[in-house]
Length: 371
Image 1: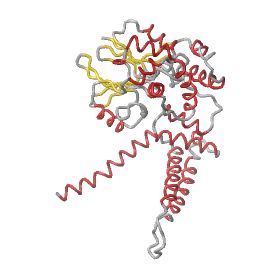
Image 2 (image 1 turned 90 degrees about the vertical axis):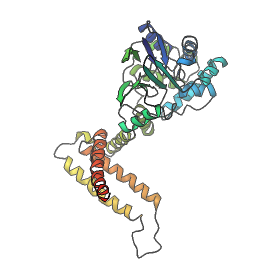
Image 3 (image 1 turned 120 degrees about the vertical axis):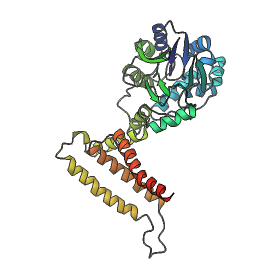
């Protein structure tokens, strides 16, 4: 049996048609949500889902719910105004019957093919519509999601527009990527195939300019069309006239890992003040590490002053607001040291978990000795 898995079509009818032409012999087609918004042809995409898939093989995405129920899709950064502008178009073009179809879709589907058990959702089992996890997210987070899903053989999800597959215990987690708005640096439409227990990630080229041309006459502002066209042509690259806030929000949406985003933000900040840690030499790295270590000492002293450490002064109080600000500053400095020494977010996470296990060992030994 052959199942075509698609997600995040986003009103891109030419891209969807290219995928369907590439896999004409699929026995079933599963859509993981987001038929609408961003793209210029939501009607064609929803009509296809209603006629060829039905609600049993279509999962509700955050944009489907937003259009169907006139809600906020909860986008972030530079994608928020793009979603708002195109949702107006989707709401105007879609007849009431199509809106009701989108509003009535289930955010989670469970089914079985032969001996294989599947769970399908748009985002994550713990939050099927809005939350993000990337392939690089800590395995402990993925294990938690697989547990919420009930340990199926296959967990199928979309939302991030980033194709990947990874095994978490007995579960193969699969994200087919986005048909209509890829964000992995490749403008081709992304999708996945499940065939007799094996999953493959695939891509197919389509006429991007045909999609861009379909915006004409819809009433979308020229600047919005330019931004959407840049994303489609480049596979996710945003135009360069972004604010610092928009830059990191776009990074976080494409790489929804908080530690990785913190490293990205610190790199931007260090470059802004004249330090590019990627260009440090073996001779300059130790000096910059010492600079940050001295700054850590001073920042720790300032944090100490927020705490009531003077036992001889009864009037001293805990200043939580300033203490939290100093903790954030300490994180800035620690991440800078990691970047100066060439430590990546993944390496830092691995080092932290290894050290954590070492800390646990003597504690567990002591507890065992007391028994």
